[in-house]
Image 1 (spheres, one colour):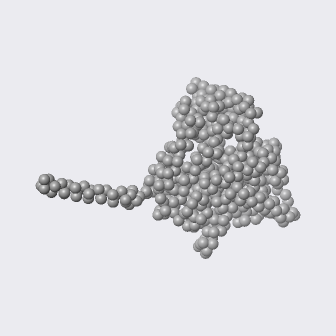
Image 2: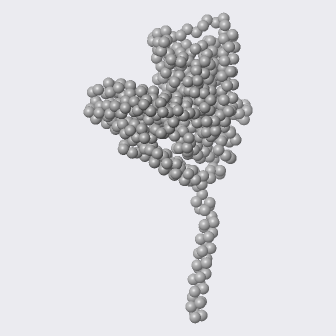
Image 3: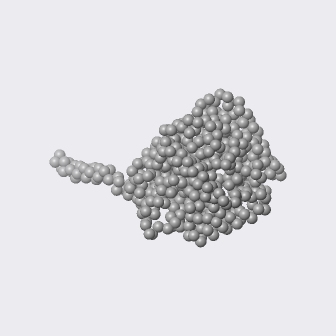
Length: 551
């Protein structure tokens, strides 16, 4: 017996030692399994795969059943992200963590509030004939869109087969949409019908362009055309039953602004800012007109030949100004990007607001075309962060993309671009007034304080000189876009303000070491991300970033 006890004691001791060691290891997970930036990147890649809806009958699956499954599974993804503590990482990596957080909030917002697959017929538009000047489409799109602008016609055999496969998505998606669209948003419904009517025309033009193509593509186009016609008829028949508001309300708007777009403002603060900018633009225009009262008026371009000549001269003059005055560094991609987007002559009766501006002086919109420089740079210079390399979801980039493009218009004016032709300064103030008026209109619609028609009327009334006409498609397009994408209509002016504030704070921080070219260069290097995150990375001050504590 004693012998057996002696034999048991070492074994029992070993068991106790092993148990103690195991308890120590369990108590030290932060040392053994501390999350790294690579863990965040892997989570991001898995998240992007999850965000896609999967397919049903060959089309993206937005059925109520699938969206309910997404809603049930999303919290687990948010918990996985929350378990990654980035507080000890470099600021740029903490910024990436916050970007993934914002994207997950974007899906949460769509599942809870916006629900475009259930409320917004325009969400089911598949055919896109032109490239957006922003990192991704302005506003929500489904996961199976056909980017016609990426194809060269006549099509190669490979492209013909690929296009046929993409267009075959249209018919089953529109069939699914009839069951998915259960929302009661009247203005979204009625206005969205126009998008689908445009798709009918686009498919008819595509059929003409590809008349000599093989049977597979011609059949796919015909089926998509017929399905779209039937869908439009169904939307029109259902329209009278839609009676509810389309705006998301102040509280939801503010939540999306702060938690998805990372804009440190509320609905009320944006209204205040845009009202101030609208009044400033009108007052400044009045003073500019007084200053220029003895100068000859601007004369609009009157022929295609004159447009081509003046547009090319404007490209050269703008880039020469930037270089001579050391405003920002002129890079190789800048001239080709502007020339490719210089536009063409439009008869006076067909000119929308922006065409009117460009026909008085093309430079006024070329300054806004910082967009195309962003896209050229994103293509040529892959960002070191895989999270920032492509477009962020949910238009999270809007404060930077639209804010800088709009801000540069006034910045270049103040830097002296129009000193030799002061009348052009008047156009800059007109453009700011137009953007403030349309943004205010969209804010009031989302606050359910104006109808979309009242927002359009406000937009027209407060755009100087009658340049925003009620009979032009641009007016309806813009107000519908901003109704579909909360926060976008105000982002031009709000983002402009945030970038101007960043410029001021960066100059104050750097003192004599500040330079304007350096400011643009470092901002571009950060990537097309929310301005609050750019400020955090450049200045080290994360106090303006919504969503909790930053280091």
